[in-house]
Each structure stands twice: as structure tokens, then as C-alpha cells.
Image 1 (cartoon, rainbow, N blue to C red):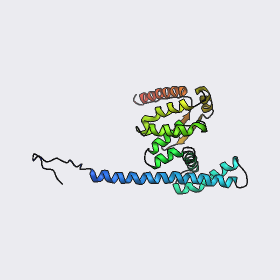
Image 2 (image 1 turned 180 degrees about the vertical axis):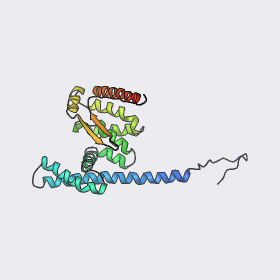
Image 3 (image 1 turned 30 degrees about the vertical axis):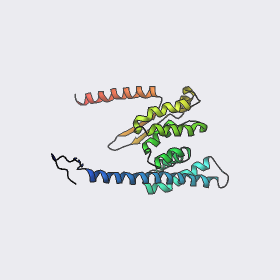
Image 4 (image 1 turned 60 degrees about the vertical axis):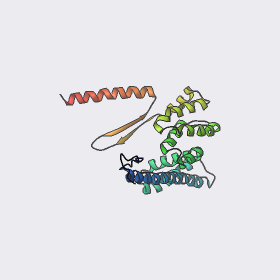
Length: 220
């Protein structure tokens, strides 16, 4: 119904983008449902691999081999590398099995996938006995804002619930430091380094200086 200006009628403003916004909303709902189903399916792939590995009472290396095997089978469907698929399976198992309350909140659209990943990252290393408490509090934090803005609050929450000192946790985290190279095109590659923050800041500063020097030489 169109509104009449200057006739005392309440004017109803209709956005010209209404149909497009509605279509986008429907697309988001489809993506959400598909994403939830995908994570659940990936977790089941992981469980299937673990069941197969434990069928004869074997663990450890056999479990890892089965996970690699199922990742290789599924990688063709996803058109991803075996390693990427295995990482996706591991992450899905963590979400579904270790954070079931968070997974349910995501499934109910109370929080987003980005929230889920932020919670899992913040909760890394938390003892099992406090994870349930962390989940409930983390969901409440996530419901208040978008994922990028709740990360500091989630980290602070995990710090309060964590019994181990920062020094102990940092020592364990430092044991996983590594450097990876992802080859790109035209003779360029990405170097990805997991290192202590103080070293990372120094590396960034040094690389920035080197890049600026190269740019300066190119213009001479």
C-alpha cells in the first residue's frame, strides 16, 4: 500500500532493496543449514575412522592412519587436499564432541560459525572439568556482539577458568611452533610462521623494512 504525503496518513517507507534483502536472507539460511550439516558429517567421518582403528583394539598411530585414509577418500568430494580435509575433520570433532552446547547454539542460530571458531580457539587447553562452564558463559558473550569483537572477552573468560599459569601454557604452545610455505603463482609464495608473539612482531617489522627497501630500489 502506498502512503499519501501530506494527507495525515502514516507514511510507510518500503525499501527498494526489500526483495534482494529477502533473497539474501534465504541464501544465508541455506548456507547455515549446509554448514551445520557439513560439520556434523565431517565429525561422523572422524568417528568412523576412529571406530575402524579401534575395531581390533589398536590406538595411536593406527587411528591417525585411519583418519588420513578417510580424509583421502573425502578430499575428492570436497576438491581439497588430504591434509586440509583431515584438519577439517579434526576441527569438526572438536566442535561436535568437545563443545556440544556451543554446537547446539550455532545450530539454533543463536550464534554464528565465526563465533564457534572463536570459542574453540579461546578454549584450547582448557581442562575438561571446566569446559561446560566455559561453553555456557562463552555463548552469552557471543550473543552480545559479532565474533571479531568478542574474542578478547572469550580469551579473558578462558584465562579466569584456566588453572595453569600463562607461563606453563606458553611453554606448551611454544613447543608447537613451526614454519610453513604455501607456494603461489608467478614465482611467489606465502610463508606462515607460528612463533612467540615478540618474535612475530620483530619479523613483521624486519620484513616491512626489507619490502620498503625493495620498493625504493625499484623506483630508482
